[in-house]
Length: 409
Ligand SMILES: Cc1cc2nc3c(=O)[nH]c(=O)nc-3n(C[C@H](O)[C@H](O)[C@H](O)COP(=O)(O)OP(=O)(O)OC[C@H]3O[C@@H](n4cnc5c(N)ncnc54)[C@H](O)[C@@H]3O)c2cc1C
Image 1 (spheres, rainbow, N blue to C red):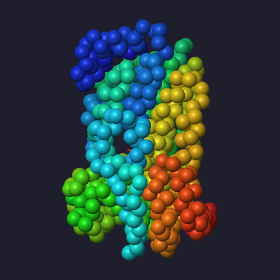
Image 2: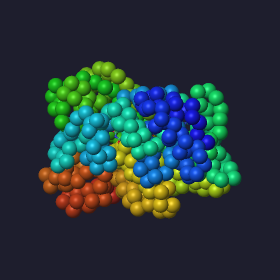
Image 3: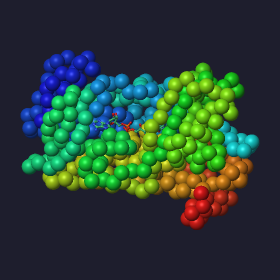
Image 4: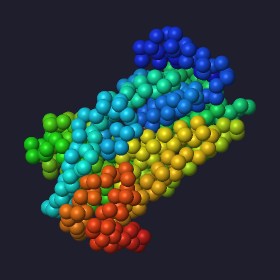
């Protein structure tokens, strides 16, 4: 049952008047509605809550943080984000990217984007999503940590800690949107997902870097992934890297910063999931059902390790599944999308320096055009167009895949 104290807490956070908060509390405590509890009030959780509430179900979000103060994080997303977010996307967009520059071993290639990528600031995105969820009718409770889950006569029983006090809540459906180390997933019997470290330093933007251009460096001796510099304004940018092991990644990153003569002004970082195969998003516990969305379900494009757009797609799919009591077309499409990114990552993961040099050389004008015309959230179409215009890339990709199979890395 939903506690009124939490609603008062949430009403304060959002400046809601008491009567609105109480109406929400009543609609969720009278026992007539089939309640959904979302654990995790970040990108995927709030997007799920808004979608479910718009479909007419009572939904409550539990967030362990004491208040709505998300840590700053500079993120790059494709234009797809605008379609997903609608009008409120504007609030979180801080810059637009019109070009990518790829560097490896003294070579470079430029890709002009037909639709600009967007730089968004997470500390603006989360409050915008929270407001959307609330306006749709969801209630949010902060300082509320999920501890465990089990069946009860009607559905599910959740053990939570609110402001240091343990209590029980009940729901028909629970959505785990609690990130890569999801406690909901572990408590419900999903195996852990593999994670990699991602670290970003906010730096002064170098004078030779235009504010509408993202730079990417492939340095396979340091990481099978890449380094990037994404400008968030004409003055500042986020320089980042994805690695495989925390301490090696840190050492390589410090060396890279030094080489580029860049001083970190702020740090951002966390472990993010690596998608290796589809994580089934639903489990039955007694008469209740548990779902996972976002990082909790490893819904991350493993080619570039972006999780916002795909996490929103997973959220929408789970909301559809809850509202329609069944399958969701969005989840099937997301599964295909994530599988294509896994194939690209498997090919790239075993590239040596000479492979990256060839890749950049092979990106002649027509292949570059495909990369610029179609965004990364339509990976199958993108891949097909690139190889149609530059068939030798297939051989290079196959070589990467075969090297992986032979265990070379
Ligand atoms: C430095 C960095 C840069 C990134 N850059 C990009 C990028 O450029 N583009 C992109 O698309 N993606 C990027 N990502 C990945 C992206 O940020 C994530 O995929 C996305 O934020 C995941 O959102 P989520 O809601 O699934 O999980 P999270 O953001 O991890 O949210 C989980 C929420 O659950 C809460 N929680 C956890 N446990 C509990 C509990 N027991 N009870 C209650 N609440 C709980 C947490 O407090 C948190 O609010 C980046 C990640 C990092 C770390």
